[in-house]
Picture 1 (spheres, rainbow, N blue to C red):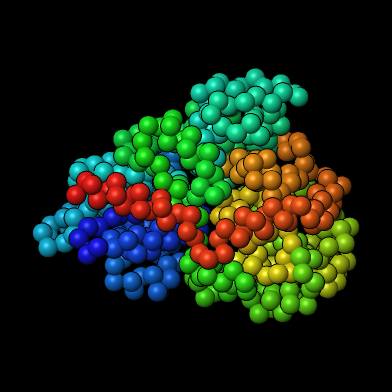
Picture 2 (picture 1 turned 45 degrees about the vertical axis):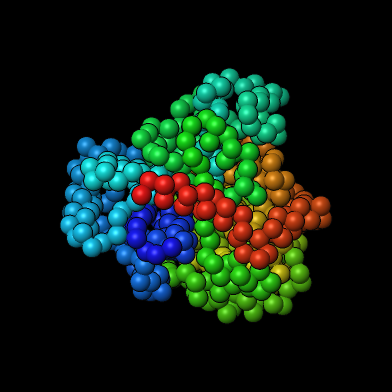
Length: 465
C-alpha cells in the first residue's frame, strides 16, 4: 500500500516497554504505515540510530514525565499531555501530511489517550505483557476468587484447566518496583491483582477500539480468545515483538550490541562472554538474571549464591550493580573458579540465550525475558518477584510446561536446597527440553505466527479510512 496514513505509538519508560514499542513501529512500517513513536525524552538515547533514520518513522520525545498510576489531574501528567497536544497540533496543521489513523498506547502511559481523543484519534490499548496475565487477572476478578483454600484448584470458566487458581498463587512477598508501586497489572504487594480484585487495566482500556498484546497464538491462543470474548472488542496478538535479527539467526548466537543500543556499563564484554561459552559443552550452562525492575533481597541472594556454589553446573550470573552484590561476587567466583561468569551491570542476554551451551534460565519471568528464552529453546526455572511475573511463571510451568517453579511457597525466603533441586530438575529434564524445542521450531523461519494478526489489524483499521 502507498503511505497514506500514520499511526502513533506511545511508549512507557524502561526497556520492557521501549523495546516492544520500537519493534511494533518497525512492523507497522512494513505494512506501509508511517509511525510516530512518542517516548519520554530521558530514554531517547536508547533508540538505535538505524531506527531513528527510518524515513517512515518519527521519534517524538516528551520532556515531562508520564506518571502511572496517577491520572491526568496530576500536574506532571498535565505537562506531558500539553507537550503531546502541541505535537499533535503541529502534526495536524499540514493538510499534506498523512491522516492519523489511530494511536497505540502502552498501558504504562494510558493517561495519554485523552489527548488523542481531543483530536478525534481512536486509541488501541497495548499490553507489553502477555495475554495470560490479563486473562487470569480478569477471570479471577469476575469469579471473585479471594478465598481459595490449601489443596484447592479453582477453575476460571473459559480458561484452560491447568491454569486453575491455587492457594500458592495467592501467596507472595510484598515487594515494590524501584520508584513506586506496581504497574499496569495492578494489585498491591508487588504482584498481579489478588484474585477477587479488579485489575487496574480494566479502567485504563475504557474507550479503546481494540487491544494489542505482545504475544502470539502459538504461545497464548486460549488467552487471546478469552480476552476477545470477555472484552467484546478486537484483540490482536502481534508479538513476541523482538528484533528481526533474533528470528533470522536461529542457528547461531546473537550479538546484542548489533541490534540493541544501550548505555549501561558492564564488567564483562560480549567477546569475553562468548569465548567462555564456546569452551562449555552443549546445554551445560545455567543463566541467572532477574531483570532491571526489582532484584532479590539480601537474604535471598545469600541462598542463591550458596546454591550456585553447591550445584555442579556452570553458570552465568547477572548480579546487577548493588553494593551487596559487588561485595560477595568475588567470593563466589573464588569458590567456583572457571565454572562461572559473574556480570555486574549489563549482560548480553540475547547472546547468552542463543548460545548452544546455555541449557537453562533461572529467571524472574519478566515477559521479554520469558519469550526470549522460549524462542531460543531455553527452559526456565521461574522465580517471579513482582507484577506480571507470577502469571508468566504459571503460564511457563502449567500451560506450556517448559519450566519449573523455584519453590512452592514464594511468600517465604527461597532456600538453598530448593534452588539446587530446581536447577538439577531443569537442566536434566530431557522431555522438557524437547517440549521447548518444539515451540522454538515454530519460529525457525521468522515470526509467521503474528503475521495474520497484523493482517487482521490492518483490515480493521483501514476500514476506518
